[in-house]
Amino acid sequence: MKKQLIASLLLLSLLLPMLFASCSEGGAADESASAEPAPADAAPTAETEPETEADVLAALGEHDFGGENFVVLCRTIQDSDTFNEVDIESDGGDIVDDAIFRRNAELNERYNVKIEALRTNGNWPARDNFLTVMKKSVMASDGAFDLILGYQAYMSTVDVMECLCNFLEVDGIDLDADYYYRDIIRESTLNDKLYYLAGDFTYSVWPSMLVYFFNKGMAESYNLEDLYSLVREGKWTLDKLMELSTGVYVDQNGDGAKDKSDSFGFATDFGNIADAYYAAFDIKLTVRDDAGVPQMNRNLEKLDAVITKLYTFEHDTNDVYTFVMMSNMTDNPLADIFVDNRALFYPERLKSAIDFRGIEMNFGILPYPKWDESQSIYHSQAWNGYSVMAIPKDARNLEKTAVMTGALNAASKQQVIPAFYDKALKVKFTRDEESADMLDIIRDGISFQFGYFYSQTINDGCNPWRIRDILNSGESITRVYRQYSRKLEKNLGVLLDFFYGANE
Image (cartoon, rainbow, N blue to C red; front, side, top):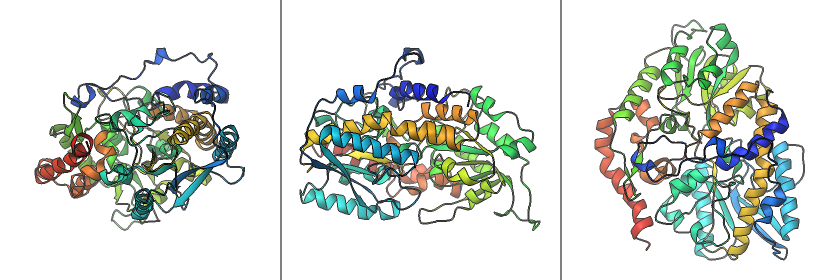
């Protein structure tokens, strides 16, 4: 690689403090009260000695919890969409698992505690099970767990928040610490109430990042310009994607019809993959008024332009193959097309870089394209199945929860994230040094929007309003909004009542 491993580790530890700071461009109403990210020249130089794990943990103080368990309610590890963030039974050779094992062993000894996972089915199809287990325990006040790691999309609803502690009222949690992702704190806090954190303990954010993969062999055979240079020069846009994907289609089976056996310039899903264009093109579902209160964004001009262009691109050419991937499906024809060297571009979660490690096809990684060259940076969004941290209202020892939450995130910053990011991605699985550089660009542009974070409530009963559904249906933006605007406003009102009124 262009960067030696030790330099990468140093750079990571220096940049993590800015990791999920807001990268959105100015001008939107909800940006007015947002803190700007620290300028790059404000960070220490690469020669500065990074903080050691001991230094970070020292800030949490000395504690002895008398051998008690620290129990985390989390999802059962049952498929490639669940990640073992909490505990590992043994040091077994996987670099990330080994880092988690070592982290827990050190924290257990340091705080005289035993970190323990309480697992229950909790992926999207099993969301009712996870929430039932959580709610029954809290309502019974049995104190069965000290912390919750739950699926972001279904955790962020009013009925769940009613079971949780406000992080801003829990002593001992330093929300300014750089191992918490500040953009989520900024976007999800209202009226001095914050019920969710994401940080280096919830490392599932990383494999959930949505990126563009491309087939390097196909790019070479079609004499494409250097894609990495396009990104660095700020010229990787939706128009450029459309241009480069055009003329790539090949009727491989000769049946005269476009089907999954053919070759394409672009293969894409109409699910979370499409919803990532909210962030990529800086489209706000909600904007904040002068008092900082979120309101539905009624300015539909840009969204209309985005949908019109994407719909034409994805439906009116043979160069694009589309598919609606449902959560209960196990086979993904899009992935099959890509790994079989029959798709030039393929947007998916970053975890696919690990899934692809055994294939022969040579691939690269890019951020989602910009809307146009006037957009200052590349925005990235995470698939909303990553874990968020929450504290149950019946947690028996808030001091222990605060200390261990900080310790698990601080130690994960030092051990788990470098293992996943530098070793697993930049060194072991990515195929070139340029893709490793692209990951830095993707990381620096991560965006968490209030409207997307709370989309389970805001979009309740309004699914046809989502980008994914409009792209599939071809409906008029203004007609769909007119049809659902009252319901969207009502749903948003449910959130605002919780934060500002009903629970006061």
